[in-house]
Image 1 (spheres, helix red, strand yellow):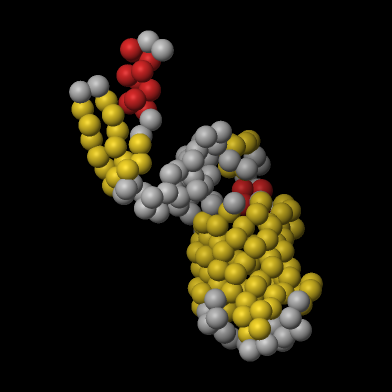
Image 2 (cartoon, helix red, strand yellow; image 1 turned 30 degrees about the vertical axis):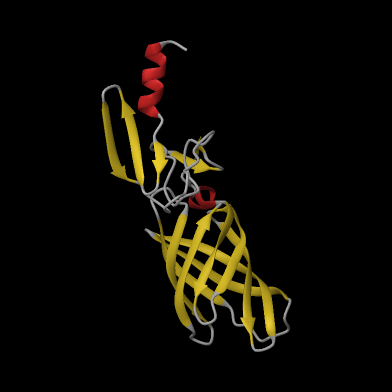
Amino acid sequence: MTNEVAAVRRFIEPVLIGVFVVLFTPGVVSAAPALGKPGCRPNCRGRICGDDGCGGSCGACAKNRYCVKNRCVKGSGDPCMRIAGRWTGVMRITPVHRLDGRVSGTHKKCRARLRVSFYSSGGRGWVLQDFVVTFHGGTVRFRGQRIVANGSGAAYSLDTFTGRLNRSRTLFTGTLRDTRNVTGSVVLRRK
């Protein structure tokens, strides 16, 4: 490797030390607070866009291109296509409910199927819930349609999540209201 290539490489490869990102440039060292989780090493290798694994982003796509599986693809502007894939997260209620599932379909038939895991008085439980996903301006709504399976036998009400996506469409934050008027907050992250 030539000295020029090594100097350029040192310039563009930040090193994460504690909670600071240190950038090396010939003759200059600068430090800036790192984004995301302390001690986490962002991974954007092979990724053009989407989550870097530490709460940050690997980049955003140009106009009329959408991030699908960490690649920018041309699209018709279909909002469901923009968020399709696996999502995990939590419903912040007591007790906390864990979420894991997929969003798929098209704008006219955007659906989600999420496994909701929780602890109840009878121990650990889960339900598999189907949602219809709709888009109104910047608001996204996951509206529970039916319980597909109930691994605990406990009574469980359909959930509705209403909220917003971040710019790279990898994070959904919103509110929860179920059919018994239980309320809380919801955070989902695309994997």
